[in-house]
Amino acid sequence: MIVGRPERFAIQYEIEKQSDGWLFGEFCYVLNCRLVGKFDEGATLNVAIAGISRLLGDAGNRCDSELMQKAALGVYNQIHAALYSDDGRTDNEIKRDAQTFARFNIGSFIDVFDGWECYLVEQDGIARILCKEAKLESPLIEVVLREGEFDSVCREFLRAIQSQHS
Image 1 (cartoon, rainbow, N blue to C red):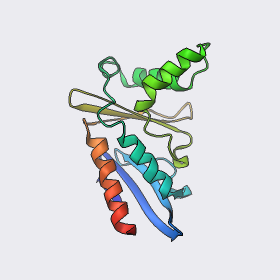
Image 2: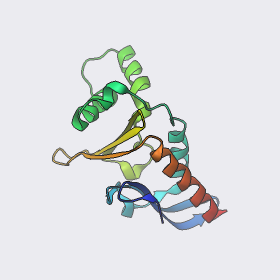
Image 3: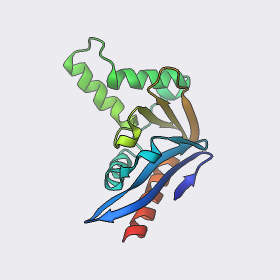
């Protein structure tokens, strides 16, 4: 099942099995008609539901005018460095950076995104999703959406999956 617009942003999922309240299947993002994540490796969809719900807690809080003015690779590199680089920062600096930049991270909540980094930055009606596989030669994927479009697709996913297994 696909919710959203695959040529822009969508969530693709399949429910394979339900057991004692657990949902098992597949899950990934679709950006510009390209799968982001390891759809075929399977997922515990309860984790996807919880992760998407947590991401919606950051709705309206991913605005940053400075990041929006940068080129895609500059945005990606700045967020990546703040969240993952070991560059001699103090513990307080690492904590501050995590508090500042974690809200942009939309891809670390489920193992299908292992090996991927996905970020979302919004400002003035525009949203930019930036995703990259950890492989160095992997290209950076950027998709420009309307501000709030990502969150709308996430809410649509939660409604759809709930209606399927209720």
